[in-house]
Image 1 (tube, rainbow, N blue to C red):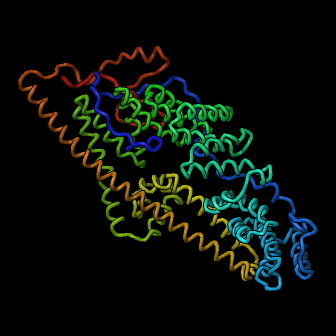
Image 2 (tube, rainbow, N blue to C red; image 1 turned 120 degrees about the vertical axis):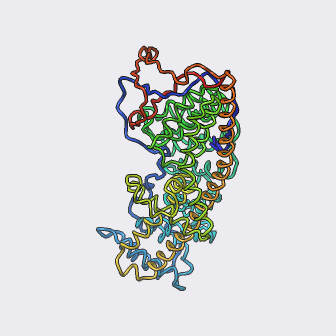
Length: 559
């Protein structure tokens, strides 16, 4: 079933309108040039805080009154001297500092040493490893170091996309204690934290404080709108989406954040049962964006709720072209079949049901076989990642998919899910840090710091991949159950089709059948010509630049 902001939408029985079979193509005579396709989610990464770009001071973040033993002070100075070389030797400094954290002679100064070690690791772009040093400092609770360690922990966790560490830091820090240049990040992360916990009113209050000048503005405003939706304050949600759409308008109609905002407006109006407004905003999503495919299906539901069957069939004709056979859209095919049932077009309905069976019966068989024979979460992750890593090749050459144990459309759908994308983004960051470790000097990798960093990243990777595998498994099981439910509806629809044909045949035998033409064969399309369109009848051949311009025309086939 289609989901709009977490609510499932089912097929609604409506009174049939006057329609008949026949698909034509109506398209604008002059089209605007298409823009490059863009993703629908805001960029995740923020620039590294300027506080980390500058060279590390000799006594970073502390006054000269901080007490250390002379021996510890000399060792720390020697380590920091390496950062002043050209180029700075952060690896060498981190190795010396790590040895100091394990030396009993320096236990009294361990918190300060660990803090400086975290700064060195941050400069090496080992954000995850650095974050754990700051966590250790925070856990010790020494008031001289906790505030600064929390600040650095928050930034490191934000860059590495580690929600666990972010939540740990957020629960212990005040925005007023944070450096001014990073407060917008913290406001956004606070809002994200409250949203995840279901505290949506707190989330809106925090997210509203992120200014338009911030790199976090788009994400914050979008999440603010979603929080208002959860509160069922739809007018406020519309206001937030409008602010975001207007703020991003100068960047062009295909801008990722603008498109997400426009789609959000359409979904809110749908939830408000304003079907016509919802359809209008769905139309504003450009076809050369990643979100357009999903929007086309959602728009069909808005038309269905308005009993606009022509528009439903027009959209679904584009959606079911060969260009989209790799997309997970089983419900849309049955929806098309049910609309044909409403208008008594049994031949078209039979073709549609045959398409559903041809596409999704093998998928159901594969999912049943794979989920029955695999319990290890790693195997689920591996199958989805095969598609994620080789997506362009598999998309271009269907013959390469023969080796996949999970159907291409299933894995493709899973790696587009928000929960999988989040954990996979974290895995990608961990792998980047693993590569950083691999490129360090051999002496560093063999030293205690290198072994520690390698084991830490490996452990985080393994646990994250297991979690990603469980997420993948849950999605596959859900999809398998969805197909089982849809095949029950498929069987019911086929029964209704056979019964409808029987009744039609009875009426023909009795001389009561419909005598009107079943397809509008007139070539006169003055309406389209007068409105700047050109018209060609559909001859069974699809062209990519025509997708989205098909229009279903005619009269109904029911008595």
